[in-house]
Image (cartoon, rainbow, N blue to C red; front, top):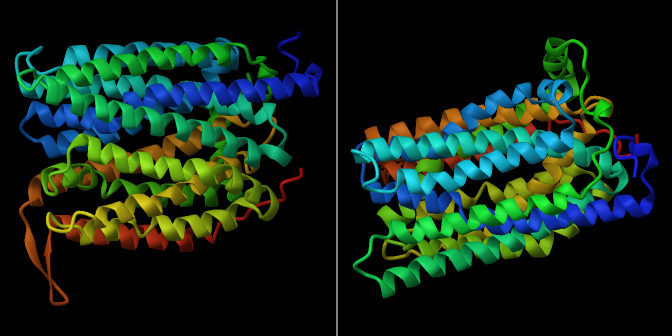
Length: 435
């Protein structure tokens, strides 16, 4: 096959490539579920290091700060190699860093718990930077591979494969850690975390095989080899794209504010074990598994923005369920993971809308800009939330006659911020799906 000329791809070749993309997403999701953020946070909590609230905030956020470097990905792709080789190399290097993480940062490997915590943060950031660089190339590659008229359905089906893989592997990983602790009570828990994360990394490497079988497409459509600075600045002069970027920043800010509290509250206050939290996440992903293809088809028919408005209205209610949950009424937290099934619509429609508002001849700078800028916004508020947790974690007071502690206050603020995102989304202008 003439791999670098997408005009020569037949319908059969394109369908085969989409099937391979499903396989890549599914296998990668299984590995990612085993080496999940939740598992890394629990490993950090086991370190019992000073300033753990800020440490968790850094785990959740610093990867997005280094993600700002993905702005250079389009120029690197254009000047060094094509999108396919750049994508594969980035994903492979990132996964190798992930495999090194639990061995280097495990308790007792370094002179102090603080050193272990920051080693964990550093490797976690480096792993995600490689993943983000590869993702810019992958999204640009897929945007050229899939016709705009069926892109929503494609993204919905790929999302189904991914949530299925994550749901199964996260549940299996939680059961394994739980069972390990039961069978080996004298052994440190981090051993189970290391084994789970290692298997996850190996599966993520295996996910590169179907990706390697997809045709490379035409690199010239993804990047321009001319003025690099002009290419980087182009998205900031596009009024329609800036409206979407504004929504992405607001959504990231409102999500980032509650992250440290959201990850520490189930373990530190409600006393939930890792398996319980992973079980709720699995239930959420099973719900997303059921609705993602339907939401993709709906977005192709009525548009991405209407679907996102309905889903965001549900997603915004999640922090309220956290605020209502107590050690005596822990079941309220289940409601948060139930409404977060609606994230499926945002996961499908937001990248689809980003593709539609990006120029077809040079989409990589737009993709890199969107994820880099929104990632920094998420990181800034996540770090802020972690710092506030360390400083005000013992705060309590009253508001409108209601007794509040720090957790409930931050969850209420998160609910208000996410709800206001509906108004910001109304500013986004969606063009027709047929170009």
